[in-house]
Amino acid sequence: MASATQTATDHFRGEDFATLLDETLGQDSGFEGSVVKGCVVRLTDDFAIVDVGLKSEGRVALREFGPPGAAPEVKPGDVIELYIERYEDRDGSIVLSREKARREEAWTNLEKAFEANQRVNGTIYGRVKGGFTVDLGGAMAFLPGSQVDIRPVRDVTPLMGVPQPFQILKMDRARGNIVVSRRAVLEETRAEQRSELIQGLKEGMILDGVVKNITDYGAFVDLGGVDGLLHVTDIAWKRINHPSEALQIGQPVRVQVIRFNPDTQRISLGMKQLEADPWENVALKYPPGARFTGRVTNITDYGAFVELEPGVEGLVHVSEMSWTKKNVHPGKIVATSQEVDVMVLDVDSTKRRISLGLKQVQRNPWEQFAEEHKVGSIVEGEIRNITEFGLFIGLSADIDGMVHMSDLSWDESGEEAMKNYEKGQVVKAKVLDVDVEKERISLGIKQLQEDPAADVLTGVQKGAIVTCVVTAVQANGIEVKVDDVLSGFIRRTELARDKAEQRPERFAVGERVDAKVVSVDRAARKLALTIRGREQDEDKQAINEYGSSDSGASLGDILSAAIRRRSADA
Image (cartoon, rainbow, N blue to C red; front, side, top):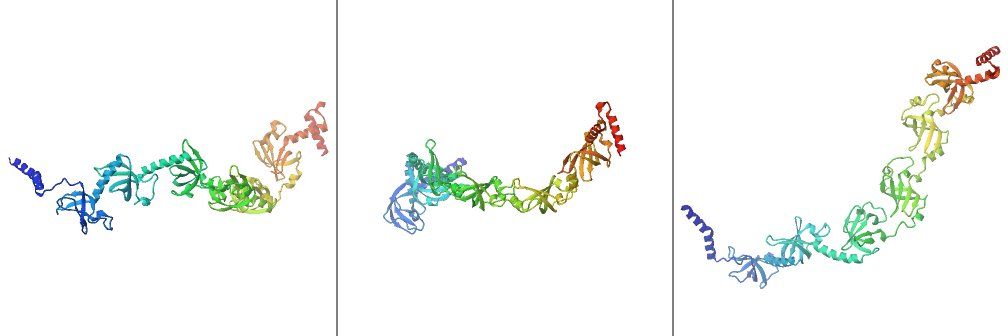
């Protein structure tokens, strides 16, 4: 029972007391939230006192009648619309708002424009996260950053504070949210301009535009409602590696329509076409063989491009860059922006190509060496490299000469002679040959001395009989020496007339044998010899002198008679 009484008391205190209080004070909340008209009675330091036809006067803050720091745009006697925020505050005054009245009026007009899909005027006045705030005549709206312009805008300052049209994208009066777009208005205007421009567009027309975007391959130019592509090769006659070297976003440019496809509505533009072509009469200005000074503009793996004048470039192929530096990247010979002297090698005006040479303006070091060092002259240099076939001797800062292993010593073999030399050693050599075309210089060290076998070689002829000393016995023959200076070799099949005697092992090192000269290699100082040939020659001579096997005598009988006759003569 006590619980029911307490519940009734609480209900009375929560609801009935509030009702009695409203009746006692006479509060009428029906006016709150409505817009009424009132007359300004007087102005105080902070408020405007307004008569709105109710039992008491209301007050409006003066800051709502003008920007901060400026005089309020209101005076006694003005009739204005106001929004009733509170019917009576604790002082008994009616709290009014000029700003909210304007907002309510603006919302009503904006809703009508939104339903009719009409544009509204507003002013960008502040920045917020993700966009900007826009004043739509009293109602605040949000402008997303992506809806400011058709293309990204780096600086929105010029657009702020300027009245301009907007398109309402979304409205929610309950939450007080309005989203607007400036981009939608621009796109609609752009579509109209694009249609007009496309209809009158022709190839060869000269138009003014603004650089809208820059890519690696060119720049897109806004022609006023339609975009065209300005390729990097059509920006200027001279080489441009990237469009950003000549253009900037937002830059005004004058271009010419090069190609226009009405079906795809693709427009190709050019800037260099508005200037004179520097390749006209280029063949007369740059004849082959002439020398010029240019600037290196680009370096590749296959050469370097040299600018002879703005818009005219030539290629120095890697093979034409240096007489001595082979298989070297062009970047190690020249540098970008370097001034170089070049020679024109060939001009192809049709293909717009000029072949240049860098090494041709310098003297050929092999020609210079051939003029200064005749064959047979003595040179001196440092051994720069030792290979399996010879020595490379430095003759200048750029060129080397080669001493083949066979030209190191008269007596030792090439392998043995190379053991006497080491890298960095300074040696003298004789110039044997200079091949300018093949860029080769042949040198010899053994030629600094007379050939000890020269006299012996002079007296040795093919077919002569010489006395040899066996120096080595091999499975396929024997090595011999003639007069201790000439090397010779007798093959196994040439060791005897009879096959049974063609055995190298029956010879001993140091044994002396007579052999017939088969061939003479004077350059290598080697002889090819035969014992079998010598024996066969002796047999023929014996038969001619002492008889014929056709008479019935055996070859043994004839040779025996020849031996006896020789012994008797002796």
